[in-house]
Length: 107
Length: 123
Image (cartoon, rainbow over all chains, first blue to last red; front, side):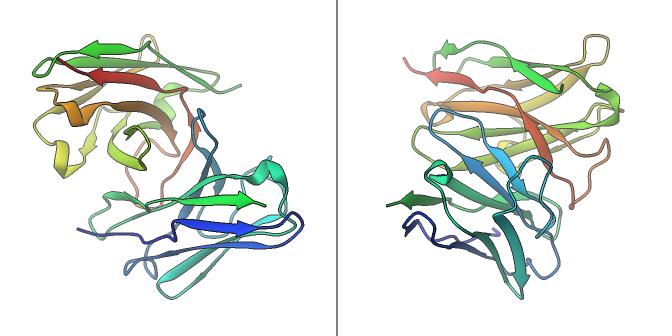
């Protein structure tokens, strides 16, 4: 079955740049989406169609795609950005797949 | 404002069924779909399937085929997810989320989520 691979954890200091990657064979053909989830809360869409930012999401969040890897970049990380981040895409049949999630720690 | 309000927590025995509701407000229900996603304790997100609120078309995760049924009631703008033959590994928080279009498209996404419903399966 199709898989999306994320690093389990990323750590950065406040004000630095965090980059969270997501790899999958179908990513050159399918869009990727990113969700932020804080403890006890529902996920929140922070990026769609690789690099589109929903309204209300701070400009420090950006997305990019290159080959089989997509990247969520958070510039000038703030303490409030500490959360789990999940990438999501679809396989060739349209079945949704989530990455395993990346825990972002703000030191 | 868009809101999805889910039914309350459930405790079920193995082999039983559960039906979770998701009442939508703040938008035209039939212009969108609903995705269901679950999250086992301490684990990641798992996609369960999609239903069109326009025509009731569905697309279920292969893993759950035969055990899950998703429906909608357009008169009350409510979506339902029923899971049968429950097992202990079905213990999870179940989320509904608004899908960006009423038709299924691999470039679709979810933009609003319900608060989640904890379903515990235990003897």
